[in-house]
Length: 360
Image (cartoon, rainbow, N blue to C red):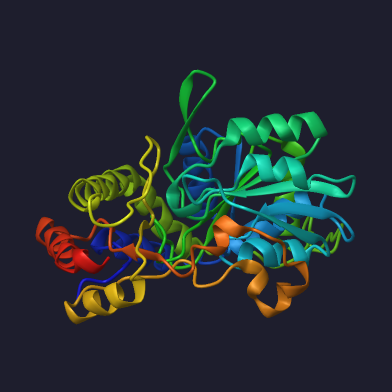
């Protein structure tokens, strides 16, 4: 079976985890501090704060920029549910808007139309590893005095051209950026997340909130959470970070092969420099039949996502018209693109999709 995704780890990660275990310091400690410093340096941020997963990263980021009960946060309707759940966990209202015409990211024009006096923040998603249109988002945010939180769960190592340079996502273009290190993401710590920011006050708030609202030991200054990363996870993350550029180069190379071979038979994703292809997502009117065909050939695939966020029961009251996003659940299909694929694996996937092409 060629899996849709897999954690790409080996002896070097196992050795790093073993050293952390044998050190006797396995909770948040020196490995977490080192991982934070290395990640901040990698993306070009002033601060990085390691947390237990990207959901907790998003929750802390929203709290850090001041989102509170009764506020509205504008976000996209096509994403993983954590994007919207964290808004609700702050007591705020998610305001769902549509995706752009030529991709899977938030439409800045729709964001502009959704801003009201109650809007407190804009939460964008760099979907599937493709950076969204940050120049347009930042222009809107600046005009209205709104903070921007970036959900970069899938986008570690991706880049965006701004300020006449290519900048890594994570060097805060807005106010705060959040990453995931889940096993399906571009690098993994098993479970884990990271918050990056250039704002000293936001960094301090996030660091305090992740550890029970604690200043000095047993000095609890506000209601906080236990959102910390372990040293074992951080030790794995440090090794993975050193491999990230190579992993992303492999993803891009696999994506280029797919696009060159499949563009005449299915709708392939838009390719822009900076995309790390956490997912390689095609569109087909015969998606379900194509997926069955791939499964019969021993090829894994995924549907990201089979429903929009406001179709989930806890979010149904916030439903909004997002017609471009609404068309996706019936036709999107993600193909294996991870760095564990061999050249033969990629060829097998291409052949299988092309064999089905007459009805795709």
